[in-house]
Length: 120
Figure (tube, helix red, strand yellow):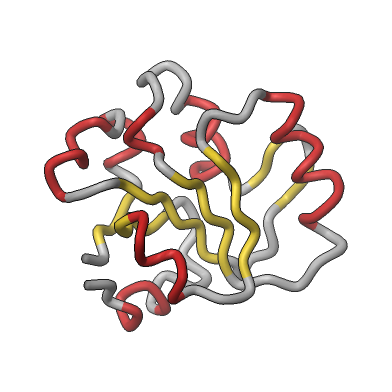
């Protein structure tokens, strides 16, 4: 069960993201959805085409628990710096990571997990 109140408290909190379960994405409207296994070029394209041209409340990285720890580094940088290759996330956008369950939280890199608030 998603804790929307806890998610909303993360607005304007730099270097913080929220972890929710995959199925809870449907409760968050106005979002940009990124699959965690996308490559760097696809991620740059998403930032270039969507970040400044679209109004949204959530930047969602889907299924972070399914990718290799080294692959999670690109998302660590996005959370830590709120930017990617010079494209900045708006300050009021909340970064969301999704996982399958509480058990798969352990698949998030320690470095990235330390920047997270679990909202389920």
